[in-house]
Length: 76
Image 1 (tube, rainbow, N blue to C red):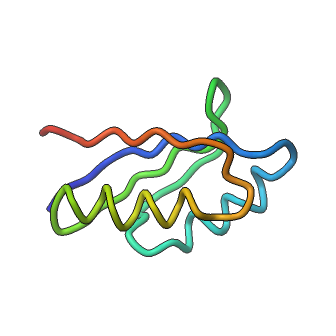
Image 2: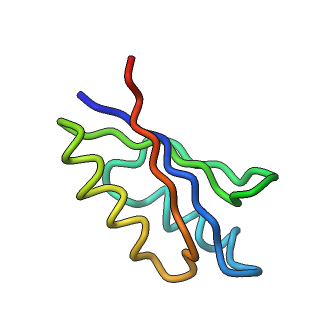
C-alpha cells in the first residue's frame, strides 16, 4: 500500500465546493482546507506508487476548480 499527500491550489472562491469533490474522489482518505501556499491538503492511498500518481492525483487534478497540484509520496 502506498500513500501520498496532495497539495491543491484552487481557483478563487472554489475551496469549499472543491473540498467536497476531493473528499468524494476514489483513493482519497482525508482532505482539509488549509492556510498557506495551497488551499487544500489531501491524503491519498493506492495499491502502489503508480496507482497513487496516475489514478488518484490525476482524478484530483481534473476536478473543476483545481488550479495546481503537488503530490508528495510517503517514503515510510
